[in-house]
Amino acid sequence: MSHDAFITKETIESEESGVLDGRQVAVKDNISTRGVKTTCGSAMLADYVPPYDATVVEWLKGAGATVVGKTNMDEFGMGTTTETSHFGPTTNPVDEERVPGGSSGGSAAAVAAGEADLALGSDTGGSVRCPAAFCGVVGIKPTYGLVSRYGLVAYANSLEQIGPLAPTVEEAAELLDVIAGPDPHDATTREEGEGTDYAAAADGDVDGMTIGVLSELVSGADEGVAAAFEETIADLEAQGAEVREVSLDSLAHAVQAYYVIAMSEASSNLARFDGVRYGVSGASDEGGYDGNWNDAFARSREAGFGPEVKRRVLLGTYALSAGYHDKYYKKAQDARAWIKRDFDDALTEADVLASPTMPVLPPKLGESLDDPLQLYLMDANTVPVNLADLPAISVPAGTAEGLPVGAQFVGPAFGEETVIRAASAVE
Image (cartoon, rainbow, N blue to C red):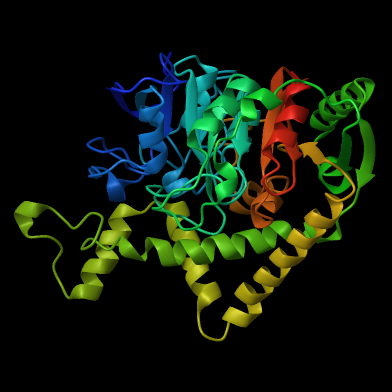
């Protein structure tokens, strides 16, 4: 059964040979693929065919991988359930009445259902880790700058990273080894990604490792989720890890700061979709939309964007507007700096920080769409990592009510090996 994981099914064979020979990789539909539609889950780009490959796709092909299609996603990455896609929702392979998480829900569902060996998603506020947790697979959000974003359709540039999803920690690390590294097309990439061997770190050895449990993020989780997570931490302690509680005051402000920054960047990035540079411009046989430029611009955006995208663009424009910039956007950036400082300090006393990936179990389809605020609060455990530009991994950590629970491990900047090692001990 497909679970509607793919928007476009297309087999792109590699002409090269490498470490991903024979592996089938699904690619999220906001990552450019030359000659294959890249829709971002939006009517705005329903017929857009990029003339070039994203760097990560080039490197996948160079490693011998076969791309098996473009996966469904929340429109422009804005969502936590993969229900805001113009092409309809994806279902969770574990329980088809439930969401797979978002916004990389199609990628996680494709891996969980065995329709792809591996997948790429993008993580702006947890969009790789959330669906990994809900679908019972592994997802990695790399350190900002480890993986090139060239060819990723921008939603919030300062927060988002492309990341791998896989059935196991070692396989996710293998894929990260392929896509990590400096890229001349993306000036934000760093040398730390050169010649990595993250897969070797998946050795399950946590003896002597210090794990800081983020108490605020455990206390906010549902009872069943917290119980599964605590059982996982107890098992790591039995394997030789030292466990201590860590409290970060700044976490109380993370969700608010995240959404102000993300929506502000979205309002700027999505301005290009106006029916002239990109996007729908009316029926061609009717000569496009009538009226002056402002009228045509508004009609293009009305027709092309869904409700969640419109909501975020409007709120982001408001936050950046004259008279409100200092009141909202500047304060959000101050909070971001505080969160970053808190994480860096905590990681001087612990090798990794741990929490449940998601504080709740996957909701049923349609259950959460009517309350956007509650939907945003579901991201409370994942968005702080993006604000702090740090690496994190979600690994399956038992079940509650028969549904998957994910454990999240956060490491210092470019400390991917440490979070991979900790997660591999959970499997």
